[in-house]
Amino acid sequence: MSVNCGIVGLPNIGKSTLFNALTQTALAEAANYPFCTIEPNVGRVAIKDRRLVELAKIAGSQKVIYNQLEVVDIAGLVKGASKGEGLGNKFLSHIREVDAIIHLLRCFEDSDVPHVHNDIDPISDAETVEMELILADIDSIERRLPQLQKGIKSGNKESKKTLDLMLEILEVLKNGKPARSLGYPNEGEIRLLQLLTTKPIMYVCNVEDTNLISGNELSRSVEKMANKTGSCCVSAKLEAEIANLESEEEKADFLSEFGLKESGLDSIVKIMYNLLNMITFFTIGPKEARAWPIRNDTTAEKAAGVIHSDFERGFIKAETISFEDYLQYGGEAGCKDAGKSRFEGKEYIVQDGDVIHFRFNT
Image (cartoon, rainbow, N blue to C red; front, side, top):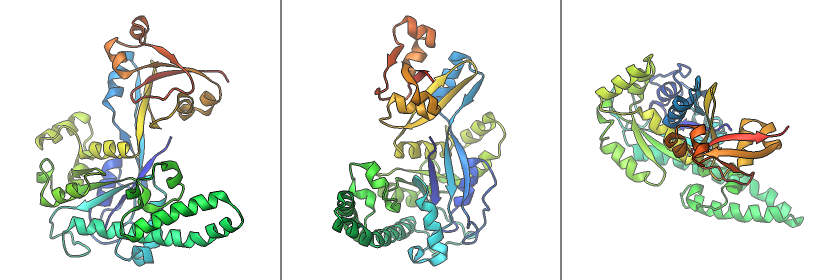
């Protein structure tokens, strides 16, 4: 199951530097002038789940394969993007294609890096980008209303249902609030509308390396604003340096010099994974220990299909062990002896951390 997120924000705030650090590549040009990124750069970042390493040690797995999150570096948005300013329409279409948004905000002072508005104010920057997304959604809905109204006249019940939902969202948008603030219970239905402001969002404060632990006045204002969506602090410049180190030991030593236990990038990925309502199950064997991403509330039958469509089509049962039991009883054999291995049917809701062996018939 592939999930992706787009890095957005104003020009010159460190998006490409953060992208390169996340994906440990130099795909994205990082330069101190607006629109140095035009076409989106795409990369993948491993979701380093320590549980998988522990499971692999117990099972003696030769290889560890983490979940991956696709990351898209989207060019900087400016005021008027919804009307085409700064190639805005093109960049907004790139945002429409991602599952979630990492909104990077400048929370550092540097005279060598000009700010597009000549003023370091992350709250204002966030409002500028959010408003452009809101305006783009208003335009999208208003262009779709006539077609829905035609459908209603022809007796299409689905058109009536969709129109009512769109009108409800439109009212929220015209009050200057994103569609996600509506808190609509049926996420799947609202996701089908392909609106920009329904996408989950997290705010990332790009700070100086000296402010990583405690933040600064600017990042604290963002944290207050983002209390319901999630936020964290990173130093994109520092993360780029860490990404260039060869071994995990070197990276750990480098982080400890700044009093950090983990990279800011790890925090971003974890928060984003939660925002996407994702959980992880594991398959463990002598050749490999592997993590698999699924949405919360996924059945065992559907989870099997994430591995291979044949597993879902020929599903018989899922031999399941919780992560905690796998650790406590020292692996599969110990769990079976202790009665902690169980067989679940196709309607079983997979839990985060489940270790599963699927039985199937092709």
